[in-house]
Image 1 (cartoon, rainbow, N blue to C red):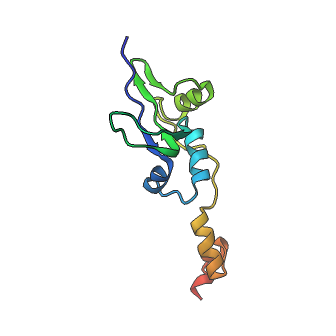
Image 2 (image 1 turned 60 degrees about the vertical axis):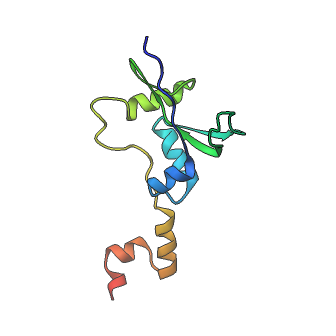
Image 3 (image 1 turned 60 degrees about the horizontal axis):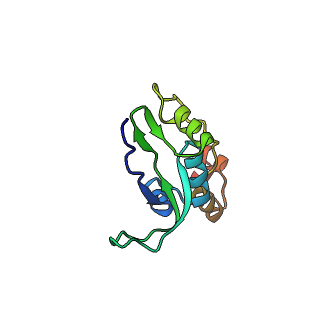
Length: 124
């Protein structure tokens, strides 16, 4: 049997920056929806000098001989298998759509809403 690969743990705020999420709560919901585990992680470090991680981290699944393993969560495993670890990939993401927080703040600052911008009221 093939041994599991190391599970990469990436700080949630770093993943938010990489994927242009403004809100960490929204990002966490996105990862969980797709079968990627988000855990609260705190460690004093190891004697070997491993860097200390604290706060929430995105724990990537490990590669096995048969596919990808999320660990002990059957619901996350099913989400991963149905959304990311399948072939062919789904044609469309089924994550619930929402208006991005930064965009809402821009609309508020301009005193406009999406409809005003789409239909040209902002151009007048």
